[in-house]
Length: 120
Image 1: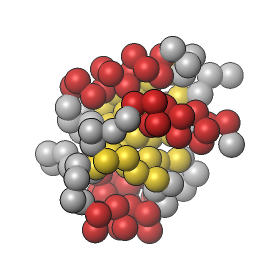
Image 2: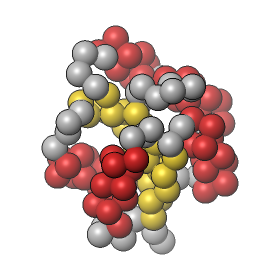
Image 3: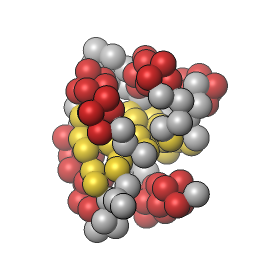
Image 4: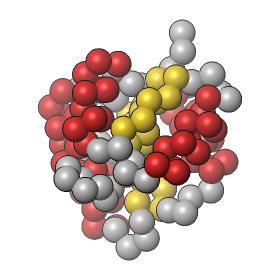
């Protein structure tokens, strides 16, 4: 059975890059540009793992994570942050995020972390 990954980021380039990278690993990749789209995909598709950008217009990553936890406590979440958002990272960890990557991240490291989480 294929694993599902949801990439939530308001930057189109990052979504496309990650979709390309994970498609080579036979993962089903969904993309959302904002929290509202992400919640819809989460309800419909129940992804195994979410790569979640911290700063987005409208609903930010933390608010989306709070809402996600009300829906499902088991979905794994890895945060993507810009430099200097460490207070938000602490909050995300309390909400159950399993890790974070600071942009610009090493794509191979991020890929390895995602694969490791999906097989464990």
